[in-house]
Length: 417
Ligand code: NAI
Image (cartoon, protein in one colour):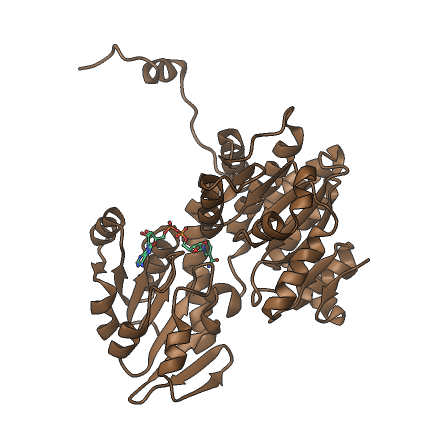
């Protein structure tokens, strides 16, 4: 078996951690049991570019049990858990091409390695695999039934490809499923981003001024959890509706140019570029801490910070100190997704729903009588509701059902005052 990982000898630890995550992934395990019997993905080759974590391992094992041949590479150079990659290879016979802290060249060589199997389905988290395939490996497009995309930034890139006529096969926007972004982006990013910041710095959040840039699904989660730990949370936004929502949720809203002067900790979650840049660094207080939890490491302009600095050193694992003439600014996890670079990413209980969607979307793509036209598609409502229903069932939560009278009432227009 061909693979490329850092250290195969750490597989034992990785295997135990994969098992631990599986305790919190009952929906994926339920799907796995059915896939094992029915083999809906028999003969299907899947190339996936996802974070190499314990939760992703449970997805990969499920797809393999369903009959798929799956190859994986990392969707971020810093998010790979090397012991998990080792266990994947050694204990589950799934080829992985990912090394924590790999450089850009290796990152793209790994993407190309998973594409070499000529996939029928692609799975992305950030659209790096699909964009490489469309720009450098176009000959593979003809084999492909469809793809799926896990995160907001990937969907933005895919919609741009679609708009410019560049997208050549159908892709399902898993991120946009309710059972994905309402839970994964909000509660998953909310908890794990704070976890990453605390693991990297061990600072007390109570009483600190925490500036959250972007009050989308991820930002809402982080703001909520930071407030829960006693921080004074300030939001910066560009969207008037999201800014209003933040106000009515009880947060202070300020433009970044005002927030920059008073914040102790800044967290970007916008999916945008250059959100914190030179004029803001100039205004910041001595000792300011910067973290990003958006998909790419472009939200904080580190090139500009570097140019303004007279010295730089690693002061603590995952914490870089930039020494400017009159102050010090600290950057966590090289400005990459702080929850994955400095902690373990989302808790398994939310990834259970995100990855249940991924598994069911693969089955949906394979079972379609006709291939879909190239475009970005929503996850079918039936899949979204099935995931929610399964999750509730595994939580042993019962809900009500509509009576016939209620169904009739909701579908009529004549009954009024
Ligand atoms: P979203 O679209 O719901 O929210 C983004 C928000 O940022 C929007 O309200 C937008 O108006 C705002 N924004 C855009 N430019 C801004 C600027 N210059 N200043 C202030 N606000 C700005 O997106 P979502 O789902 O919250 O995702 C945000 C990012 O996080 C994406 O890159 C996504 O891929 C990533 N993500 C990261 C995860 C992680 O594990 N760390 C998990 C899920 C998503």
